[in-house]
Image: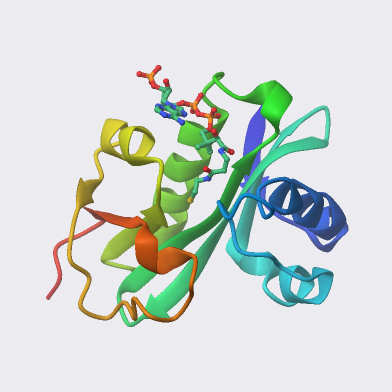
Length: 146
Ligand SMILES: CC(C)(COP(=O)(O)OP(=O)(O)OC[C@H]1O[C@@H](n2cnc3c(N)ncnc32)[C@H](O)[C@@H]1OP(=O)(O)O)[C@@H](O)C(=O)NCCC(=O)NCCS
């Protein structure tokens, strides 16, 4: 399994992974056009070039980025792929000089296990989506804010 930056050719696989978790409200839907437009902000976990997981690192505000659309194929869960994607998202955030990474999620134990703590993110517009306003916000410092 490798985690790498996504390429245009991965867009369809990324959308298909996200779509698995849209019906129950876990993830927000993404169009193929959206994924293609933002492909440089996605990471994928692959095995033999088959995409088994994805994550979108979205710059939300200066120095602040959100982990979005984190998804691992149901048949590949529990093998460390989700954790590897979060660690790769952190490395990407560091390379882009972002100070804080946060996630809006119901997967509290998963994020706490990776060092994320419930945190108030003032920049976050909690009303921006019907789905996200009922979830927890978990954040981790990538570097100290100046
Ligand atoms: C959440 C998700 C990304 C985790 O991916 P994964 O590859 O199964 O997770 P990992 O194998 O890397 O697990 C990392 C750790 O988190 C724990 N964990 C994983 N999923 C968990 C869950 N739902 N609840 C509690 N703990 C969980 C694992 O036990 C593991 O702990 P350990 O290191 O102590 O063994 C995956 O279950 C998924 O795609 N879920 C649907 C979409 C979703 O919920 N996305 C997050 C919203 S932003």
